Length: 187
Image 1 (cartoon, rainbow, N blue to C red):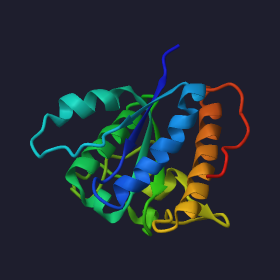
Image 2: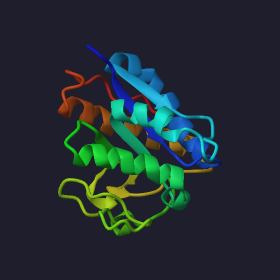
Image 3: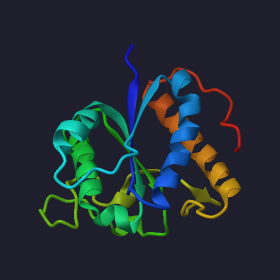
C-alpha cells in the first residue's frame, strides 16, 4: 500500500516557517505509523523557478493539503498557486483533503473561493464558497478557532498535539488508518 502524501503549505519567512516546521516535526513522529509521507519545502522558491514541474508533481500526489493561513500567505503568489492547485484537484473530484491551520488572527469566513478570476479569490470547492466552510485542524480554544501561539512554545506544542488528534480523526474517516492510537502526547 502506498503512503498518503501530506503537503504542508506555508509562507516562507518568520514566524511562519517555524510554526509550520513545528507541526511537521510533530507529524513526523506519527507519519510512519499512520503511513504518511510528508512534503515540506524548506527552501524558498525563487521567482521564475520551475514551480509547475517541482511543486505541481508533488501536489498531484498529495492526499492531504495543510495550509498555514496568515495574511502574507493569502497575498503570496506562490502560496496561492499551491492552494489553487490543491483546491482545483478537490473540485475535480480527486482525493485531496483540504486542511487549514490558522497561523495568525484572520477571518477565514471572509476569504472567498470562486472562479471569478480575481487574483484575491480562489477556485470554488465542492459546495464551499469560503475558506471558513472548510476543515480547520485548528488551533481551537474553548471550541473557538484561534491563532497558533507564536511566542509560547509550550502552548503551541499543546495546540499542535490537538491538531494532530484532529488529523488522526480525518485519517480514520478517510480509511487511511484503521484504528486510533492513544491521543498524541502533549509537547
